[in-house]
Length: 232
Length: 217
Image 1: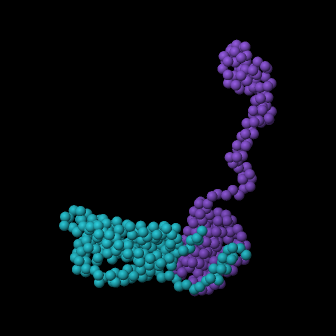
Image 2: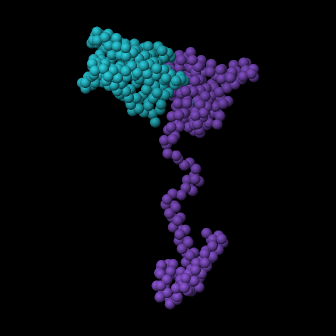
């Protein structure tokens, strides 16, 4: 019964291989001498399939059933040779069998069967690859799906981080000496000019510059320390 | 029971005896017999004296032979490519007669421009030729497509192109006895249109006019 005795699930990964042997076993054992076992097996497979197809054309349902099962590893191999992988191989096997059924009158019993079958299988494999390229890719990996940052998540995360940075900066500014803090608040936060700030605070422009310079240096130091301590 | 088990069971249950298709050469002759039959039906309406005269002009005669050979070779190549596993190189077979046909027709075009006494067709005649070519091409291509569908073209577009070429060439060959004037560029244009119609029809069917095995997904 050829492949009938084996599991039909998961045709990829070579599950066809051993299943093809029952058809050949009887004849192959007696004739293979080790010289060219592989080539001889191929000839026997060709002969067996060709005979089964000729019988099927005459209406022999049992031969046809065996033929269809024994064609599966050949089809799967042709599909994988074209680059079809995974479950798509099963689809190609299925579609090739349907085409084989519809086109069975086009097989010429005087010619080899395998090139005829492989041509159909390769065509269906190309169809499958084309279909696959047209379909949108689905994400099957749950972790990848969860970790995928869409726009709303990115915006929310961004907002949270921005608020945390603001808080840390405010705390660092609050920790500065009064003169430096005033320089940062007026010149940095409120974006006043040196002259305006000087008039407002009664300090000289030069003193404000020095205070701002020291403030920025202190802030850089305190924020860098906080990051190194693992705050961020 | 898996899907493939069920499929094998249903296909086996659906099995009916089939007669293997005849070889491509026999099928080509079958289609060409239909072409000749169509020609025989139309022959009483042809001006046979004018045909004999035109066939004495070398390039017209060569063009007619080229068209007949193109029809034969292209249909044979179409039948070959409709069988899975046959080489696609068969598609090259009609190229030499096609070159002969186009070359000789082009000579006719040149002669029409160079020789002042040539009979150049007017608009009404061009429309008449166009109608003739399309109306002859259509039944011939329908017949050829039906015959090709009995096989299983694995390269349906290639087979459709060859079928289009075969019907266009056959229609051009059948046109010879009814052509009221010498070969011109309009002939070539008409043939190009006829080929395009067949290819477009196959394209509209999603490449499946000939590919019966493709699943409708």
